[in-house]
Amino acid sequence: MEKNTMLSARILEAGSLMHRPYVRRLIQLCRGMILLLILWTAGAPVFSQDSSPPTTAENTPPPVHGDTDVQNSIPIPAPSPVTIMEEQLLAAGYAVFRDESIPRAVTALNRSREALDELAGRVTKDHPVVSYYESRIMLNRGFVLMSSGDNREAQSFLETSIRLSEDALEQIEEDLRSMSLENWEHELSIPALPAGREIHSDLWRVLSDSYMYLFNFKGTLYQMSNGAKLRDYPRKALELNPGNLRALLSRGLFFINAPAIGGGNNGRGIDLLKQLASSGNELLAFQAYAWIGSAQLENGNGQEAEEAFHAAQRIFPGTAWVAGLRRGERSQGR
Image (tube, rainbow, N blue to C red; front, top):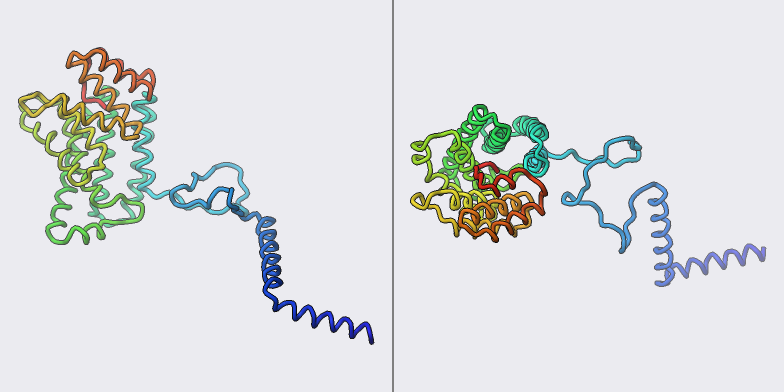
C-alpha cells in the first residue's frame, strides 16, 4: 500500500512538472530529436546550418541514369520541351565552335526538333512560340549545313527560317493591335517559356541572322535590296529587349561587315562587340573576340587583332575558324 501511495505521488509530481515552462521545452526538444532520428533512419534529407540547402527549380541537378534504388528514390520532374530545346540549341553551338563536330551539332538539332514536336502538342496550333523555336532550329540547321559545305540545302533552311519568323511576327503584331501588352504577355505565357517580350525581340534577331547567312548565296542586287534589314532588325530586337545578347552580336556584325555607304561603322561595331565580350556568355564572347580580331586586322591594327584572337583562343583553343579569320578569310559563319 505504501509503495502504491509513493508511486501515485510521484506520478502526480510528474504531472505538475509537465506544466513548468522549462520542462515543456525539454520535452519538445526530445520530441524533435526523436523525429530527426526517424527521418534520418528513413533516408530523408536532414539539413543543418552548415549543410546544403534544399534543391529548387533553379538548382535541381540533372537526374542520374543507371542502377538506382527506385523504391527509395525521389521522382524528379522531366525537363520541359522548352528547356530541352534551349539546351540542345546551345549544344549545337558548342559542337560547331568548340568541338568542330558537325555530326554532334546535327544530333543536338534533331533532339531539339523532337522537343519542339512535344511542345507543339501542348499548345494551340497557331501559338507563335512554335514558329519561334522552329525558326531558330531552321536557322541553326542552315548554319550547320553552311559549315559542312552543303550550301544548297543550307539556303532552303534559311529561307524557311525567314518565312516562319515573318509569320510569327505578323501574328504577334496583329495580337498587339487588339490587346494590351500586358494581356498579350499573359496570353503568350506558358510554364518555362521565356517572356513574350523576349520572344518578340528574338524573332527580329532570328530574321536578321537568317538574311545575313542567306547573303552568302545571293547576288549584289539582293544584298542591296535587303541590306537595311541587317541594320534595322537587330535594332528592333534590342529596343524590345536590351538584354538580348544575340541581337547585340548581330548588330555589331552589321557595323563591321557593312560598307560605309550602307551604314557600316567599324569602330562602332568593335565597341558593341567589346560589350558582348565582357558579358560573361562564353559562346558569344568567343565569337565577339574573334570578330574584333578580324575587324582590327582590317583596320591595320595588328597588335590589337592578335590580342583579340588570343582572347578567343583562350576560350576555345585551336579552332580552325579563328585561324581562318587570322588569315583574313572573313565570312558570315558564326
